[in-house]
Length: 267
Ligand SMILES: [Fe+2]
Image (cartoon, rainbow, N blue to C red; front, top):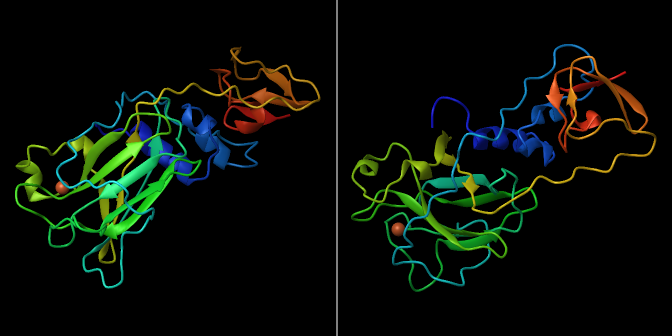
């Protein structure tokens, strides 16, 4: 990772802003969708394209403590659970940077003392992403145990796809330097939140995706066409409304003039 915002960072921002997909996920002026009524003035900055070369999230060994049939729950906290509270939020994406719904995430981790519950299901739970690809896990910061740095275990599976088994890590842990399994690609971003911890991580699954066809234009006449190279000042109609091109671009599904105020203004 260099100093530029990664694809996932940008997507996270777009999704968090309530930007609809798939336009937000095709490297299009996603942020433009958050700017309503911007028909004058400078166009918003375009969202960087989805081309930072991220590979799918790397796998890691399961370890000895996975158990099937974990309860379905997003919080692993139980009454009186000791430990520093931790929330992990993120998204699950496919290879075309679009969020994946219905993805199974099965988490398991050590308790505050570094012990796994092999008799019951403490600190074990599974959940599914919603249509927007988001997940939230509420738990505690796992304790350390001999031979390993601090980590969470997770299995991630899109419907009908292979299981990704991997682990997530915490920045700034001394043992990250000595744990042979540690992989910086699996580092969460973690911040302190009033004594609790807020972590974020986005998964990229090896799931092929193709951009959608985009919406059917409303009635009323449309001259805008996918694949056309538009230049600033070009004029089109879409659904009977007239638009003027603000920035040169080649039209793509999801970049319909009413959806892309960075590219088109009414009039
Ligand atoms: Fe472990």
